[in-house]
Length: 149
Image (cartoon, rainbow, N blue to C red):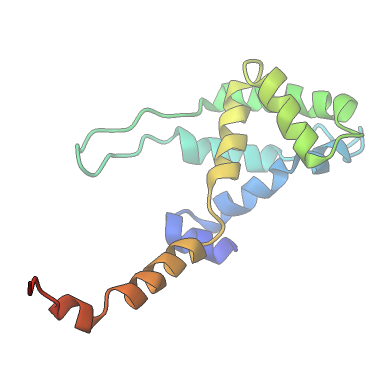
């Protein structure tokens, strides 16, 4: 999966691996002694990647940055404690629903990263299946058909 994402999205291996720390169920199961360091390196990696100004190839102007490093780091520290106390008995769907309905405004930068993790396609198989189907429909014989009324 990591290799596939790297090739398709052009991101380095560290960025792809950093998203693994965002399994909220993992956060809820970290013990209280090690929670302060949990995921900090990964947050730094993601914040550096998403805080960089990237250039829009068509306009040659920079995109707006979507993450502010200091804000994300602060949110992460608070969120880990919140997850420890609130998500112990939740499954992944309940966590996402709770986060979306109740925490989106409280943790806007984390929400953006969580959203990114949910919209990154894991493979391009669906698109490839579509192209395979079009090859069955659009044949050489079909291309030669004309309006012969």
